[in-house]
Length: 280
Image 1 (cartoon, one colour):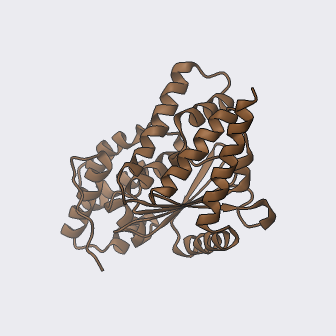
Image 2 (tube, rainbow, N blue to C red; image 1 turned 90 degrees about the vertical axis):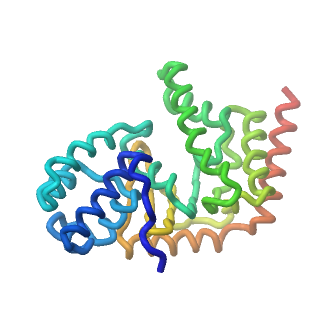
């Protein structure tokens, strides 16, 4: 098994906290489980804090300062973690996503944020926030496109997406914009940058009809599952729970059409949108 990932403490407040937590825990002669027990945290959760995958909360920082004699170090530096470009319910998941080596996602209604074009993202935010100013929309779009920069690396992370057929059929921003958005996904698939499958409507009911599912794997920490609903999000790290969500995703993959057939369908629907746009 590979050893713990070496964090650069200067790279982010989270990396700084993780490196210092590991240093002080080891100096105190405590295992991850022993450090976590008084806070009712698992050893794996402590490992995720140390590797920078999970975000340290203020009550945890206070207890670490007390247990490790850190003289307020964790509380002081934990304040920096409160600042995020993302909504509170998604901030920790977005930060974990940036460190993941593998991401598997099921999207029931919209193209996932990592795969959205600028036009598609703008249309989503305009419809979802009808009273927001253009400057606010600009900031939201820029943040979403910045997230997608993790795909600039030609090989990592592995991104495997299952799109519900409804995602292809739902017109977001008009026919021309939809054609562009679907071709963007097809282009990534043809360049073998992502794996994409379509779950057809004919597949019927399944276990994730009521929301989206994202699974994230890491080289030096246990996997996480993220479930998102309207204005809410839950990051799950319980091993048994995550395994159940992994099985759920595997069943979705088994019900989806093949990557080759999915690519053909995505490009066919994009052509249909092109024809519609030409008529106007």
